[in-house]
Image (cartoon, rainbow, N blue to C red; front, side, top):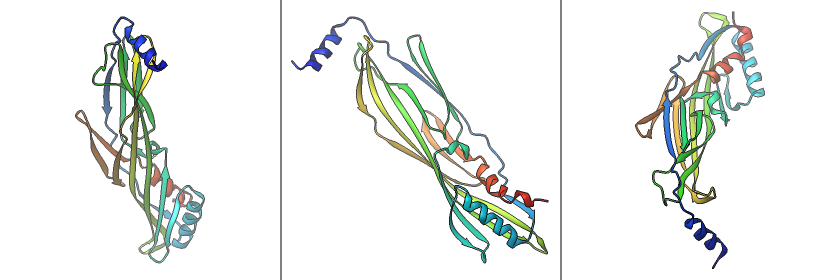
Length: 235
């Protein structure tokens, strides 16, 4: 008989029952914010424009289009640190197996790894669970509008309007743990991706199951960073 089959048969003969784990899940909603995405600064239009273009070129933003006549700068960005820029709330989880309890507390827009108990126990001698890995990535585009203040050529207004696209990739692997402590992989779980799309000042919501609705919105950091490039010209 194959050695692996012999080992499995021996394990099943060990007396006793494995303690099936249990899981809890609590979601805390994101904070609603008023996003400041416009400012007026001291400085002529051309001077402010030049400062903004110069600093954007040095940043992590990719300049896609510059049209001084139309007063528009279009930039794009990608970040694996999505939680720095968007708020999707927080999740608190527990995974309990007998007296042992593992706790997880993470921002929904940040990368996380946790255990979750299977809904059913395949065999009395085995406890079943999965290890879940969440990987968010944020992409987007921002239109930056720069224009002289009507009637005051010495002052300039800058506004930032951003389109956010947050993709959260979720993958996992199932396991069976024998009462003896030996762990066997039961294979990979189907991969899923949730997408949240929203604009500056807006939000996006999705049903995450079990009566939970996840809502994502901007933290205002990106808008603040871009406006900050011309902060030295504020009155």
